[in-house]
Length: 193
Image (tube, rainbow, N blue to C red; front, side, top):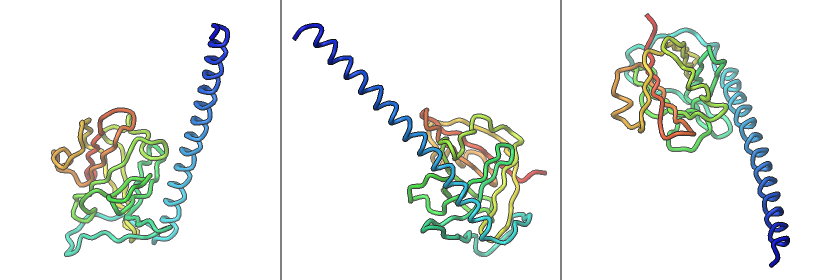
């Protein structure tokens, strides 16, 4: 093969690779926009389906099971809000089911053991690097009870296992998987004083 023929083949391969990358980027961005609009749709649908949110404080109960509301076959246990970031996200009730939204991992809002896992994907908790101590966090259950918290501590860890999540007592613990690094951000929250 002549060097001219090799160069032509390499140029064609390069053009094909650039086109493939552009197509992949287009579909990736479209998927992000779809995930954002679906999260907003579910959060607003849940908000419309529950009673008007009322301020609540955790209280001792015989049954700490949180009620669920099913939308499009997905069971949700609440709505997670971080007002500073304009974030309102649905929280799925089943950790074992794949989801593009934050999910209940363990515990209950009622006994102050709630643990919610999410990711840094755009449209979810993509603002995780900006979260700081003192930020307001709200969780509204499917009965319309709205619980307010403040971020009290932040920790980066390699694994979000039970030991890491329980390393500090908190009424609400969020753990956010950084999709671009092998680490998690643990966000510990308690009721404000």
